Image 1 (cartoon, one colour):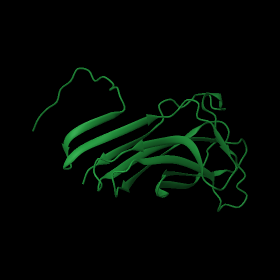
Image 2 (image 1 turned 30 degrees about the horizontal axis):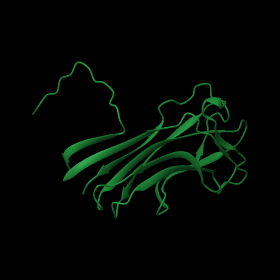
Image 3 (image 1 turned 180 degrees about the vertical axis):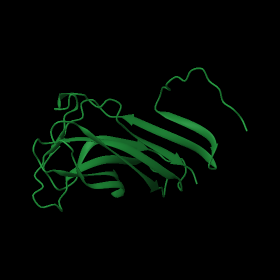
Image 4 (image 1 turned 135 degrees about the vertical axis):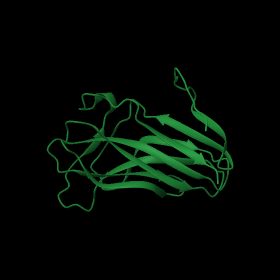
Length: 172
């Protein structure tokens, strides 16, 4: 057994990391920080893209992609709103992760961020794009909210810095 001792760990730079010798090949990690100007609004019961996206090109056709995202949102004051969020692989319209009928503790007062994660099975080495989507939960009668997120201009007193989406390829 080995022991690793360090005095200081510094943040990395760049947008990918390669670790050699894991799972029969290299593993790549792609990360994208949420844009500060993210801005969307909907009252729709149909999913909309919110602008939190990530692309990754698998190195092996049979790799698995682990995808994780924090989906930020707020709802209108006094609403009984319930929200659905999902991560979708764009070219195949495959839902990788989904959370349904999520409610707010205090609508209109705080921003919320839902953590989601899932695994996508690759079938080629073509570039994949994953995107986050939201909608008003359609299966609830009287669900009257507006889902929105306004970045630094929203109602939230503290803008969510450091929210991100990331993907990790794990070769098989």
